[in-house]
Length: 161
Image 1 (cartoon, rainbow, N blue to C red):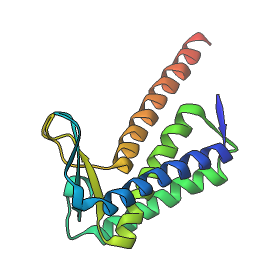
Image 2 (cartoon, rainbow, N blue to C red; image 1 turned 90 degrees about the vertical axis):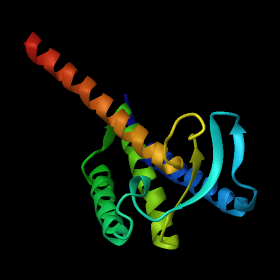
Image 3 (tube, rainbow, N blue to C red; image 1 turned 30 degrees about the vertical axis):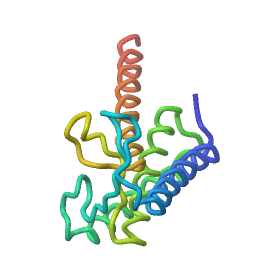
């Protein structure tokens, strides 16, 4: 199964829009936060992350923002110029990964921090995160799974020859 570039970019842009709209809604309602969404599992808590992943490297955000932009530009460039169509799982994972990266990059570029709000610490101890973070993590997992499946498929074809 392949995905066209148009569908790829529609998925990617849709995920970026969801991320940015969720952050705008959180900012507009931050006075009402924290708010329990699912008792004992999920709260919305306003948080300004001035570092990168989980607040790491606070103070080096410009460097990591530029590095993120370069990596995202390379990935988007590969999609635009190297591939005519992208395999399904790779396309979904890559779109999620790029969308999450751009979603948090937009925050850093325009706010100098990333808005985090999804808080599951009442369920188990974990840093507050956002929709873009979910996209990055799921994107990496999906691309990893697609790579393993593709490798095993290729290996099986090689063994059958």
